[in-house]
Image (cartoon, rainbow, N blue to C red; front, side):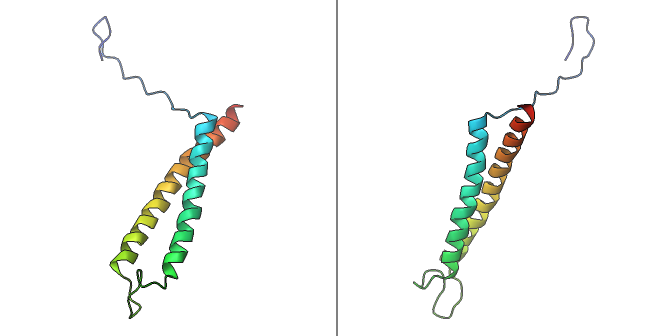
Length: 96
């Protein structure tokens, strides 16, 4: 950027983003909920007796691998979202 006298000025750093209290708590709750739901799902998937997750020889099927990949992805996203919410809650507690 150039100011009115023709001199270059350094760019202004962006302001820090803040989350509201309800949004912070929602994100934290979503992260916890993701872990509760998907841990339960993986336990049930592992104990599947219907033949969907494991074939007759006991080997995992495509259904198992796809749903395990979905669970891992949800764990990662839930963890990330939950950590953002936790940071928001902690920041709000420091300022109040």
